[in-house]
Length: 281
Ligand SMILES: Cc1cc2nc3c(=O)[nH]c(=O)nc-3n(C[C@H](O)[C@H](O)[C@H](O)COP(=O)(O)OP(=O)(O)OC[C@H]3O[C@@H](n4cnc5c(N)ncnc54)[C@H](O)[C@@H]3O)c2cc1C
Image (cartoon, protein in one colour):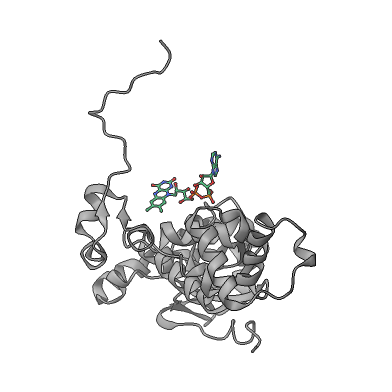
């Protein structure tokens, strides 16, 4: 396997502007895109999940059974437990991603996933961005492709960069200067999660109705996961594809995937017109 860490810091995206500073220094603004590289994972994850399942349904110990499980048995057991919702069997598998090129806006959504997840995020307290001659931001595609919109978008970025460097020149600590950075500023994380948590995340975030940036990230992560654990992650996707049901109600009716999948449209939101009754007499 090639070193997934190699080259992670080299690709900077597209230069979309610059900020001239006093003293002749110039800071380049790069618009970047998400990258999610699988750094580490439990090898043979499908087989480990199948082994966990087998222990549940075997009279003896898994230690006494012939190893390793053949691919067909692995596929059958993973299929059985995941489709039955017995997903604790896949929790034994941990996956670690290096993520970069996402906005603070996206990372805020990402870290809302709490159960079975661990995060390390680049610190704006300890990292002094004034030591670099560039900043990285994420620009929504709706803005990136229209030059006057892009200019309007860059205006507060330029002002923030100018003020950040001024404050740092005046010895204001970066932990205070960072308050200038808005949601567009790029961040980097190490993220790890178990397979069950990842299936839940991918169900929510690969849905067409999820926000575009975290959806993009989710698709990148899914592609990596399918490569190393195809039996588990063939179940990864929005519910229109995995359950034949779209739970988005009226919102889902506009989704092109609804027609493509032939999924049934249901509304998860409790109706305000339905009268609730208490079981207590
Ligand atoms: C389309 C979309 C729009 C969103 N919009 C908003 C928004 O406007 N504002 C906003 O604040 N957030 C929003 N979110 C974030 C959302 O509310 C969740 O915080 C996020 O998706 C993480 O999901 P989760 O809690 O299921 O995941 P996890 O935190 O990983 O939890 C996994 C599961 O564990 C169980 N669980 C976790 N914690 C508890 C608990 N304390 N008590 C009981 N059971 C628990 C639940 O079954 C949960 O589904 C949005 C998410 C999506 C996908």
